[in-house]
Length: 489
Image 1 (cartoon, one colour):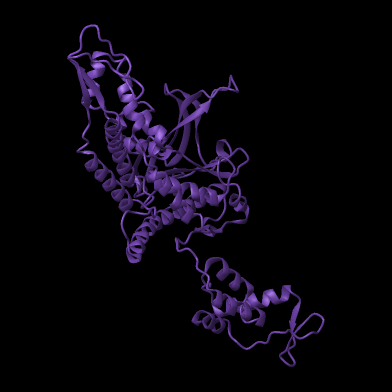
Image 2 (spheres, one colour; image 1 turned 60 degrees about the vertical axis):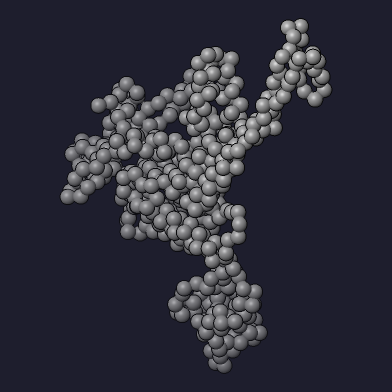
């Protein structure tokens, strides 16, 4: 089979991914494809009579249709919630640079996390590839889901694991620096003798980059065994297996597309209602009518008559109702908090928002797990301890609410030296007190006082600074007691 061969699951879902691409790009992309708005039978018959002359009928029909950007707006709202999350990152000393330079285009781990979450929300699948550059530094590359064309799993050491991953890439042709013409190539990863190999082929299947093992160093008898796995992770919306996951916003995209189709009929009906068709009869052959409109007068002769064929629009309200139903369906299926017609109780809104957070919860968890696994691959590949790698994100989407009274009590406690300034700052920025042991909090207080040049007079228990002056705030409350008192207020 040729290198362009695709996985059956890819073929089954490619149209859904294309729909999501169009939905995110917006109305222009939706209107470029006639598949999204089928031609009414009358227009089909009219084009059979004169395809070029009657093409304007469908063009006008499409131009009047309106596509609602619910999908794009919903994605933006969800990413606004995700952008508040702060990843916890721990790396071996030799991989610290990845925090600020982790992607193929030079962005850090936080940006990589946001990219993965965004694509997982919109397409339900993010192919993530670990690689090492010419300087021996690891980096990560993500592919659009429609370019991850083939993959396969098989038994590897008693477990089902990847044995093939093929990606379509677009390389700019070098002969003209101003041109945007690209050459399609295919990058493949495959297992051979329990070692991962990679190669790049053109559309004819010819090698343009020779097959080479990954993770090997040296030559001849000094060759060290390479990677025993393919460094590719398929991050999904619910898990990170190679299987295709569901698309969280697919139902919303379908509702938006159906609303677009209904709107074409709705706005065409409104247009026809406001532009009735004039008719005349009984005219003499000498009478010629070539001008119509409010500024024109017709001389119909003694036997002539005229009138209007008016579009009654009996179905306009039904179409409008159907469009409203699609909006309701989109709101129920999507993650965006959107105003709806009628009155919605606060409890109902809270429940709907919690559903949204549940969807984001699984996506954030799987995205963080995928990045952590990729970092472990990078550590193993470059000879560092993979156990030292941590990349965690707590999926807490509640907008922080800071109680001014609690904040004031915390500030007093900081001045009194009974809680740390870091605890105060975390409540100020997140609306929550940190989950920290008493000894850890006491250590923070001690470190802060030491850095400020404050010493404890062990003879009388007074706190004095470096010049011997007594600290204005007294001691006596425990860290937990002060925090609890502040929360109790």
